[in-house]
Amino acid sequence: MKLSDFDFDLPDHLIATRPARPRSSARLLVAEGDRITDDRVFDLPRWLRPGDRLVLNDTKVIPARLSGTRRREGETGQSEARIEVTLLDITADGAWRAMIKPLKKLREGEVVRFAAGLEAVLEAKNDGQGLLRFNLEGAAFDEALNQVGAMPLPPYIASRRKADAQDKEDYQTVFARNAGAVAAPTASLHFDQELLDALAMQGVSFTHVTLHVGAGTFLPVKVEDVTSHKMHAEWGEVGETAAAEIVATKAAGGRVIPIGTTALRLIESAARGGEIAPWRGETDIFIYPGFAFQITDALMTNFHLPQSTLMMLVSALMGQERIKQIYAHAVAQEYRFFSYGDASLLIPGTTGNQGEDK
Image (cartoon, rainbow, N blue to C red):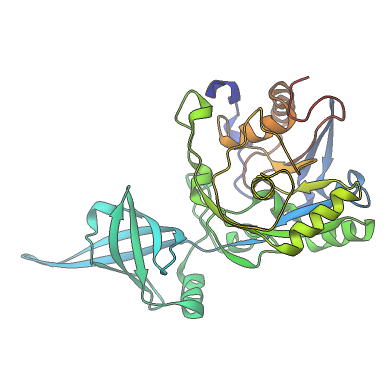
């Protein structure tokens, strides 16, 4: 299985740098079996039925991008360097792994000072990343971070414009509650309260799980044989209530539909034994064609980068040739791509095995 099998041509102007407003007005490509329908996210109730269960990732994105300064005394006096920090994840003892630019201008033991009284000491350097320990903890840290931090927009947006105050609302789901992600579960950004209420009135149920999306989600695949790719790990949890709800839905004949690849990866991680069970920990599950789905009946997701692990995931669900057709249609119809782009609802055919090319 070659990396080039998951490539496609994407015109630059189809990369979205702002979301649709209102959220649910984004376009929705529905691929059901061998059919493709062009619709809108607010019409999602047309495609769901009573007894279906949507699995929502309730992770909350932190404003993880910080700009500070390092001061140093030298023979010629005091020097100062601008230091850019992107927080990645927190360790068990409360330090933060972070990408630091330029890392070479910061020595272990030196302090980076930010605004709002926030500062951090570099404790170590490992694998091109730094380990930072902040002077504030708990609510005081959260308050300072919210004041001085910027949302960690994906590279393909950040290269076109800087994050601003609007992104603190746009790059957060309406049901976010467990802080810890440095990237949003972007398919969920399309949901507003009005759409959630309409689905609930229709008899669609919701289950909340948590997967803290890491910056590794944007790492490129660098091996030609994709089966040898090593996935990044992300922390997640499927609680007892969530597992029981999903089991009950499956038993009643309802469909389990994760909203986004993060929710899908988490529930499939929790179901490696064949049936979902409460689960907590780090998952580095890698889903590519040939994967045997245990729980997922359909998937709502945005349109993904060429040659990415997420392209491999949707190809596993729908089949490689089918995904090529879907993406060719999306490009031809000028759907907006990536994190702030439009959405797709992928419903595998009822004939044949899920994920096989037909």
